Length: 284
Image (cartoon, rainbow, N blue to C red; front, side, top):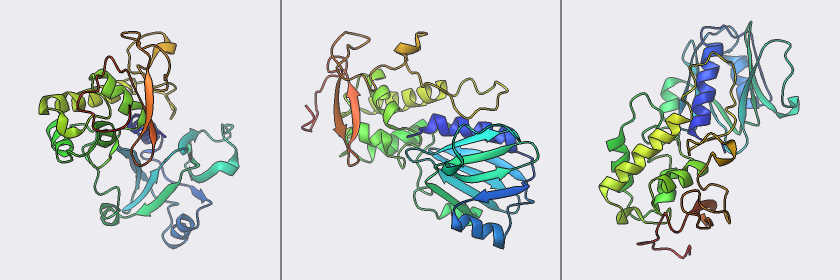
């Protein structure tokens, strides 16, 4: 699933490509979006802004119209110049925004809705997002307060709950816990405010590091491989994620994994670097 860094990168690239451009055509296979194009055409409007909100992406048009999308597990946005060959088959397209010089294509996007500013604020799931880790001014204290308000949660699950912190997915969950030497199945109530502050700050730092090269003037919405270790070798880019059975990059202990939370997402950790004290679970 795309995480907050991917959505932020996508929004930034779409904004650079589309902001100020007039929509010349909207193409969609989604009936509800097509109905809006008939009743209140997107064609002729100007793209004002494209921005990320955690894992949500909002494309704002003139005249108070907003296209809200969520990638879920397999969605993605691509941009192409007229006549350029698409990297995905047309059968996977859900929405295409045409302008005079760029077209933006949403492939396999599972959630795509038009909103006004007022209806967007009422949209369930979007209207209750926690502090965004990639916001211009990340509110670390508020993030810690949100985590502390749910002492019964395992910290791995709490980090992924978008109403507490917006932007963390399954990869960063495991990597943040490892970087902070916290067992991902520890309950929030077993962690001090100092440790929760370190977790929030580390989450902010790691996500920021994965969007740090956005100053480059390139029109791409795919970032390649996510990295957290800071190592130059691309085979050593992550600490623990998807490395069950392999040696820890710090201590050599075998990495373990276990399914966590109601969605049974696989979590990875080092049992030596992340001791299991206060783990109130049957994970081990």
